[in-house]
Length: 226
Image (cartoon, rainbow, N blue to C red; front, side, top):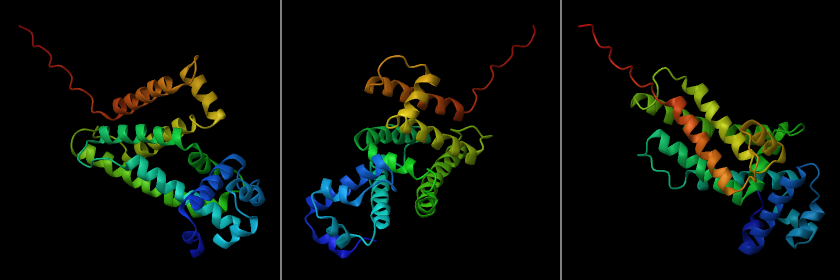
């Protein structure tokens, strides 16, 4: 937890410090981020950073958790529990893409936790992140099965894992050159990866999820011989 002094500084100064920290950690990774450079970008003295946080590690964990909270508000905000599973999933994918386009640094922080040497941070962050999403998806899919909206033979746990995997890879394609290349190769995207192209691929991805989850249409009745 940060020191109490963090809450005593002006909100604009605090927000600049935290946003610059998120961007720098996302760009450089944890190990390569220099606290002196961060202080310079945030417009504060290097020593003052330790008036707000005990260590670089504490600052990193704080901005990662802040990013998680901001992401959840953006993605799940406005979600109506009365919507069916398909409407809820579409809301999550579209709101998620909008958030990532506005704040790419927070998804990059998430992706960086999977890098070699980041295992101690994964232990502190990943379980908290993944359990929330896994529980939500499994509950919505199970409700869909019970309502007859989702195929009865669905393995809910595997489906939740698959849907979240699609989500992560798609969102990563918006911020990572590596994942953008993958997106272009697999989906054969030749033109610019602009907002229109992203929206088209998002619509196709959502349609694929729907087609996998929906119960098969009943076979037409066979006519008897006259």
